[in-house]
Amino acid sequence: QVQLVESGGGLVQAGGSLRLSCAASGRTFSTYRMGWFRQAPGKERDFVAAISRSGISTYYADSVKGRFTISRDNAKNTVYLQMNSLKPEDTAVYYCAASEASSISSVRMPREYDYWGQGTQVTVSS
Image 1: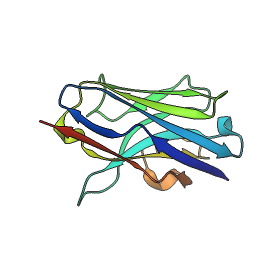
Image 2: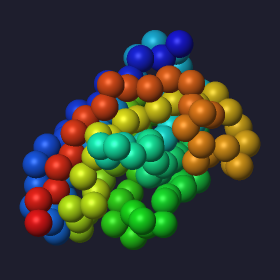
Image 3: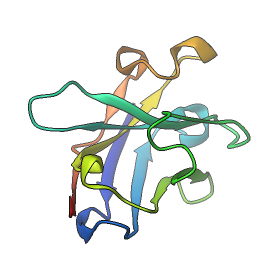
Image 4: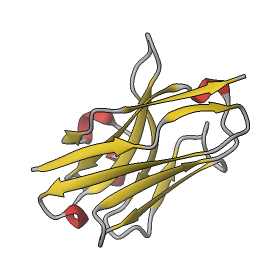
């Protein structure tokens, strides 16, 4: 098992930046593919970004491509989400998640992630 704790959320103006962190403890961090998801009020939980176990491969939702960057530091058991050029529509609770799955086809599916953090609120004002 792995425990995940997100941090770094907050209130920012449109066009600003935030960096989210997700610290993992428990089972070896490098054995998990990691992802970030977000959920706005009244909406489903949506895929944002994911990164392979080695950090070599990354995947992004079209809505954040070019603005957000996912990275990981396996020595620090931490995954990051650098968010630039933020928009009001980025407002949501952001969750990090860990997956034991290997198939690339599952990287965007919340149901393929086995462990979740408690979430951190990101609010972007216009």
